[in-house]
Each structure stands twice: as C-alpha cells, then as structure tokens.
Image (tube, rainbow, N blue to C red; front, side, top):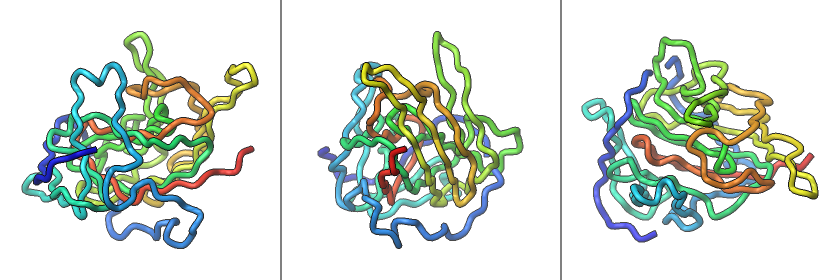
Length: 261
C-alpha cells in the first residue's frame, strides 16, 4: 500500500464509557521467549495485509492505515492519537479513523494469537478471528455499569434482520486507561466441516486473556458477529482489524498454529 508521509491526528467519534483495569508494565510477551511464534508485522510496512473490500465498504471506505515507530496520547487531546508516518513496527488507522478494515493475506485454521493495541479515549475497534468473530476493543476504562459484549474484551453480538442478539460479556473489566498499551492473547478453534461442506462444529474461543486476566473460556460462536467480513465460515480464514470506529494503534501481532484436535 502506498501511503503519503504525514503527521497523524486521529479524531474520536463514538461516545463510550470508561473501567477498573490496571496500568503499569505489561507482562512479558510470550513470543519473546518462544521461537514458535510468527510475526504478522514486518517492522517496515504493511506487506502481508490488504483492505477489506466488502461490498458495503467500497463506496465510502478509504485507506488511511500507515506504519510508524511510535504513537502518543495526551490528556490535552484525549480523543486523539498522534504519530508520524515512517517505516516501523506500529500500525495506526489514519487521519479520519473512518477508514477501511485491515485484513491479513494469510489464512488461519486453529491458532493462538497475541497482539498489543492502544486506544484514545472513547475509541472502539475489534479483532475479527477468521474475519468473522469479533473480540471487542473498546475504551471501557473506569466503567461503572454492568459489563456487556460491547465492552473491552467482549465477544460481540450477532446481527440478523436488523436486530442484534447474543454476544458474551467479559468476566471482568481488565481495560487499561487510554494511551496505555494493552494486549489480547487468544486461543481460537476454527469451525469444522464434513466432506460435503456441512458445518459439524461451531467456532470456539478456548480462552481469551486480556491484560493478563482470563476473561473467557470455551465460548462457542455459532455464526459471524456484527460487521464481520462478507465471507462464509470456513476451516481457514484471515484475521481482520477494525479501522472505522475510532483511533487505534497495533503492534507486536504474533500467531502460532494450535494442534488440531
């Protein structure tokens, strides 16, 4: 993707609440001591990634994603992130933060994922395993209301005939404050299909750890969550990062296959 050099100021857009997460240093990332992990960012550019060209996004979507070496947040401009475009290992979602979603060219079956992200205040994004099943990224820091699928760490609801249903709230609020690096560590099992292509087993999150806290175990997803890619469920599909809901940055995106069972 060819991108113009520029200073980045991402404006927040959606009203959200805030959570009881802990700030401070992140735990040691598993890829640092185990060579079985494979990076999905090359530290230079967006090679290996493409835009989601779903029919409902082509007309209004633009590409604003770029790489950088650092990103910052300040209380003076809490609904923004700031960065300068440069070859680097951090990706940010652009000037307007209503950009298109970003998708891996690689496809995955059963896999373990580790990634780190930063949000501005009141920001919103998501990690779509197989491009279909969203783990919500959301500024839930200091929220005092009951947790729902819409909070940070939630598995988002499904959508059909203009109505939402289902979804899974995280067990606890592990969100950190805006401008802090946070992480997800997920274990995901793909849906299973027979020789005729009929689904015999639903997709499943074996476990999700959010900032060191286990927030889900053995959660079954019987279909795609809202705003998923326009692709069918399959034994292997890509990873998608949501880019159209507010300022977000990602770094240290690593995966490794899970033993198939």
